[in-house]
Image (cartoon, rainbow, N blue to C red; front, top):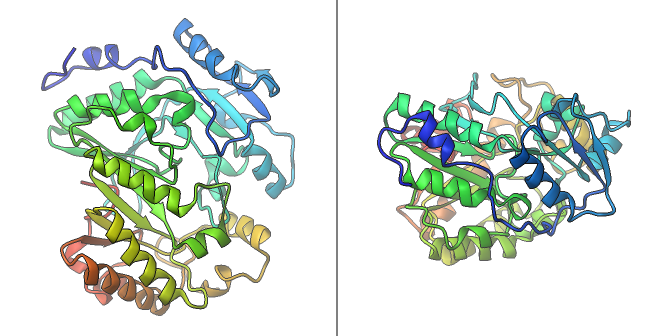
Amino acid sequence: MEFQAPLDAFESSAACSLPPEYEPHRPRHFRVDRIFLAKGSLATEERRVFVERICRLYPDADLVECQDTPHNRVDLGEGDALKRHAKGKRTLVFGELGDSVRFSNEEGNTCPNYWHFSPYGFCPYGCKYCYLAGTTGVFFSPTVKVFVNLNDILTKIDVTANRLAEPTSFYLGKLQDGLALDPLTGYSSVLASFFARHPFARQVLLTKSDEVEGLLNLDHNGHTILTWSLNPPALAAAFEENVPTVDQRLQAMRLCADAGYPIRAVIMPVIPVPGWKKFYREFIERLFSLVPIERLTIGGICSYRKARSLMDKKLGESNPVSDSLERDHKSGDGRMRYSPAVRVKMYRDLIDAARSVTPEVELALCLEERAVWESVGLAASIGRCNCVL
């Protein structure tokens, strides 16, 4: 069936069941030691078939059925935060998410706020600076989650988008990696098709994954915007574990660009290591020579206390990220950041590098303060950053 404008919730949900014929395969960067079947995961026959198909990929994993336990209450039995974090990265949880489509509510920075949705929770990658690791929803139960109520999620997007009645972005990547688990679920085929036909809803997806095979032959209609999180290879090697290499990500970006997807990039967090200027300039030149980037968003570390604590345990109390953070300054949104002077210096140089290669590229900052936007000459672009159209 084709979507008509406007859609009603019944028509939308009927078209958006779990992928019925998709054959899952293991993501290259996800080792699974334990699987929890949490509340709602087996509530329908469709869900049961979907979940069992994936579980068969991991015959040696411990399987725990806990139908009375919500996905965010799975207890890993580990009191040490760092050990619990490591164990969670190897734990797969199936469940359902009721509050799956939300509007962000940032205050104290210039984030335009936007709609975001969650068919997944957290991710299997091992970035040492991860901000998600310190959030309330992850810190005490840091498992990798697949939410199986996909039709409910897209029905909520449909209702919201039709109510707004104008092209609106729905962001996949705020509370997860948007593509890391796609080899398991095949969700991209349902998502891209839904957004392709919708008169108002548009998908903006953020990822570090290179497993884009499921995207390349889809009729996306330009309604899915793909964004990659990147850093120069030397910095990625130092601060990102169990993640596709930068070269692998660049190749994936090129493939998706050739398939007609609008492509964006986020360079975040910029990290002021010795030699940073050379690293970032050379990388930006290479990035723009390989991929047609429509919008580049730049940002620094912006973590809360628990995420900072985990990062320091991984990197040591003295490390290139934490040593540059302001100790006493409190940003308007409560996050820890580099000093404004450090951020402005780095942003200016990255902006200059991007414009020297592609003068017409759209540039933006992520989760920044107005004074910083103004200092780097991007005040006119406030509100036009990665997660919105």
